[in-house]
Length: 271
Image (tube, rainbow, N blue to C red; front, top):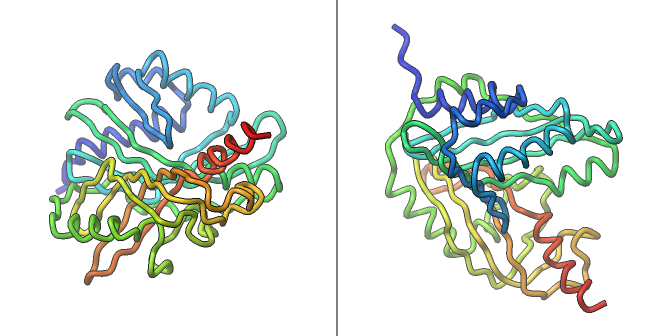
């Protein structure tokens, strides 16, 4: 006997296949509330019709063959985390890029209401500049068969402690966490204070969105500028981790491009 698909997962199947991969923004009215809000880095895109859809259409124009590949889904039935890659060929020069992302979605049992998301746009920019696209990670074997799992307060507590200790920004065991495109290098901030904007769990999985503040530690190379080391900085990041035997491992995507742009603004103002 085939189990009935989880309704939130079924909605996300429409989000990925019918809307994103077909570039059919008419589907948005069926899967998103009019007040849908997307938060990425310091930006807030509020309103489905007047703000979100025009932004999506611009992306589809820039990448006419844009695809979204799902790597993993977790949900507690109320919130859902999607780890994915977007990839495509840029229209104006034909260059190809692959960039990773994690989105944390909330719904009301009918349509999507919110999304905290980060995408590794710095990696995309570097690939487009070099002409050397990254490979696409393997897709999830059966993403649309994902079942909701109950919240896990113990796992949430452990992850909150880890975040408060700076672990999501300055991990002690970086081998257990894959950052961005996998070539993230050292921590980007020192003297970190982290504010949790969103956090939920599903079984052993914990998803979160953090706003971290501190001093820029370097690590962005020419994108950040070594002259900016020590400058106050803000970094947004989204993570999807698992907790097993007290060990935390998984994926974090940081708004490295937003950090770089924020560091460049004071320099431009002083020039």
